[in-house]
Image: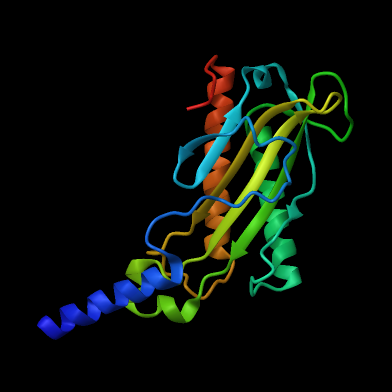
Length: 206
């Protein structure tokens, strides 16, 4: 029993060495136009939402950019797939919210700019062992930066810098992209909530 406990503690320590015990601040790559409005709302998130965003009902969603993440083991095609998934999910968020989508700038139209700044695929062999899976050592993760700006003036209406990890307890350990997509799905759900709060008259910034 004692030996088993010692082994478990060792696994936890090794897991912390690989992924770190506790969150680290998301990277800032210079992608968004202004970081000064951001306020920390968690260990892995900074956000700004202007009440003026509620006045916009039409959006342009730019193609997702890739910034950083050169050490990722994902192929160019996998990165392209993740970027397209990210784009499609946020288009879906806007459509579900009753917003109009367009490709043309104009009065009352906002532009959504998003970038994946770091993506790390799941490490399948680390997820095979229950101990390492418990620590989350092999879990995939992603970081992003994004902003919403007025399509004519360029005024920043909202901005976010954040990161997240996949669900370490899921069983699909052999899918390199699943954890990253799970993180993106979480971001999409959060965006839906913020937009709903804006339409209901709240600031959305909490």
